[in-house]
Image 1 (cartoon, rainbow, N blue to C red):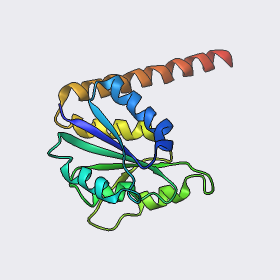
Image 2 (image 1 turned 90 degrees about the horizontal axis):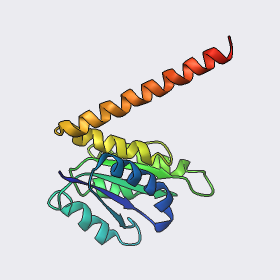
Image 3 (image 1 turned 180 degrees about the vertical axis):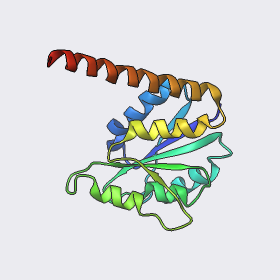
Image 4 (image 1 turned 30 degrees about the vertical axis):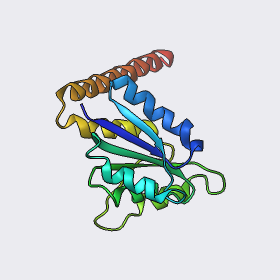
Length: 163
């Protein structure tokens, strides 16, 4: 099985990234986590993106705050799918990161999840891998069914409470 690369622009993004790591562990998907700044070590970030396909990666997740450019910088240097996680930071509450992650020029796509949406970033990466991995697809289906059952159980509980 190929792996997912998670790149954060700063170690301060780790609390957000750990949520994605938890999901990947739950699904048994191999991953690698790096700290590479698009602005402070652009050559290393570019090299990582350029070599990602050959390094056994299938999807890259980029987490960065402030006027984040990491997802775009990675996407500019690979044809692998890139998922951006805009991280909340002081000042604009993550809106600057959201806008800089989602506003990509034509031809360089970045899928973007919600501010601090690391769990969904990991699930989207798994869904991309599940296109050709039936075992992952089955795990995703089972998780969706478990979620459906949990909501229906809560519905029954609330309905009984207010009879």
